[in-house]
Length: 403
Image (cartoon, rainbow, N blue to C red; front, side, top):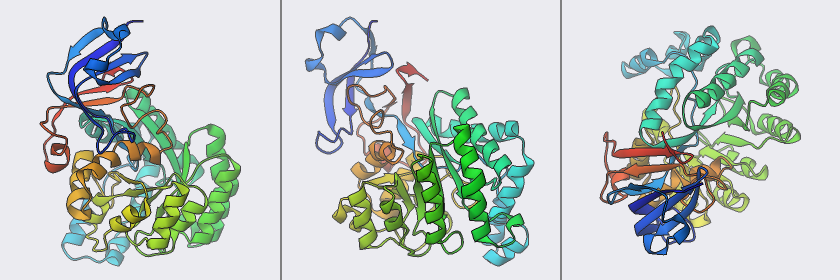
């Protein structure tokens, strides 16, 4: 089969073997069978690719396709009215008494059909795709019973069949306590590990198991039960950790070699070091930090010092981060968390792929990886982090085809 050839390009390969962003000027990319067969200087292009179908990129920049490694994209309705209530001075307790909070999201999702969920979630997915996203992780966690968790995960998988995008699903049954649990967290965790999680695994609907380790959610001991069950079923884990307090969730995640620990505003030096040793990615979520007006920033300096991998994601959800822009997430990561341009771009490509366990196939422009690419009308990669409310995407390629 003849190779497709992208010529007259500039590459930010994010290849860790190259310095910085892995920039290659006067570059070319050859694509064969949906994968990158060559990515590098045009002068080094092997002759076997010279007769491929050519696309002149006219000096544009090419990066790996963007990856959103933490979303709650499948949900029903929205919580704009409780947002307005908070703006008008309502407390969390007042919002909850009025029927708001995560319970309202559970109620709306349970009332929605699977088709409703797909229809409501597609515009959010399309917004990410329009900015160059080629892989998106989607969590469950608003069903909180077997029927509705399965419904959520099926809807997420259907999104991947309707659009040219890679979808990864995470089972987040340990997200919150459903109303019918009547405050008994231990009993609900027992149901999760003995009934719901095994059924989700048997259906093949989850690529990973997630949990929320926090005072308002589940304790480290309860999360340990969930993670032990996930390990017994052969599923990798990830964790919402240390967002509102330091329960040492990062260290807990690291003991299970978790793919990622996410949020991490209250993570300490020991947690950062534990993540680095385990190779667990710290996924930072500036949209939630911004939306709920947090004041404790995640310890980026500690992560740098420890050598912890850092990713960025939207955390798209109806209550605390209704964000569907990885470009804005990068700007927020830079302005709010003081991340560098290199850290931000790596955070939505290479490190996001690592956070999903997919770095062997996507996330950098390297031979053998899927040809998931974003082509940009920019003069320098820093523009992708610098601009606000501006989309410079010229073209998106998924598995070697324009999408």
